Amino acid sequence: MEPKDVLLLWPNVVCYIRALLGTIALGLAWFPKAPEPTAVCLVYVFSMSLDFLDGYLARRLQQQTKFGAALDVVVDVAQRGGMWIVACDLPGLIFPLLELLVFAFTHSSGNSWKDGCFADAPMLVASIMSNGFKTPCGVLTVAGLHFLPLYLWLLRLPSVRIPGFIILGVLLCFGRLLGLVAELWVVKRHVLELLRSDAASLSAKQKP
Image 1: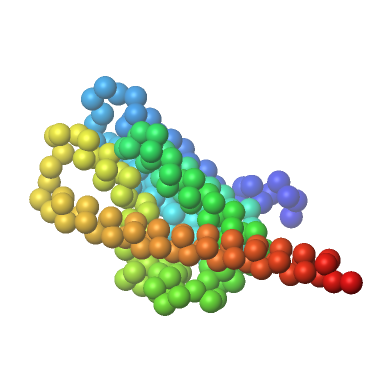
Image 2: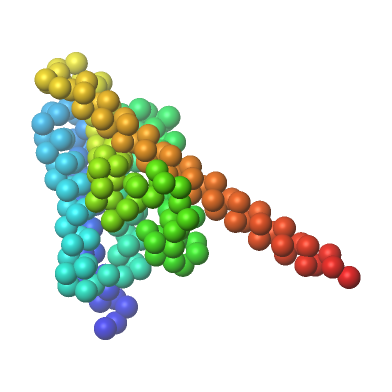
């Protein structure tokens, strides 16, 4: 297989489709003076739901690649980041920047980011990451990551009020808070590793 063939593996093609749909959803939310929330929600949610399909195809077809794993995260962060900015304007940049920072830290060691980076995680973080997010805490975290920015955008539209809307918002906020706990732990862990490595290196150089 040639390197260019990796670009056209089915899981990666699904990621390209997700990126296109996410761009359409953001355009529908950003440009019209009176955006249609139903259209935005349908396209955005469908795009995010395909996140499960590309992972399934990668495992099922044995087409798991480092490029595909990185592409998957980049598409996720780009879509969520765009919706954060649409929902919260410039302050919304905080979350995608934090997610990109965590992405850089978890992939810097060369290990599988779901395994190597979380082997020594505290109980709460481990419960989020356990079994590929297939736990109550993991599902809630993924829901908060993906859909809280869409929820906050809907809050800006006075016409959108449905039964259970506040309860949904509380659950999504709690899920995003769980994600924030895991992200801050990753940042703390990586910074401490850098400091320990630097301290050991400098100590070795200072020995006579």
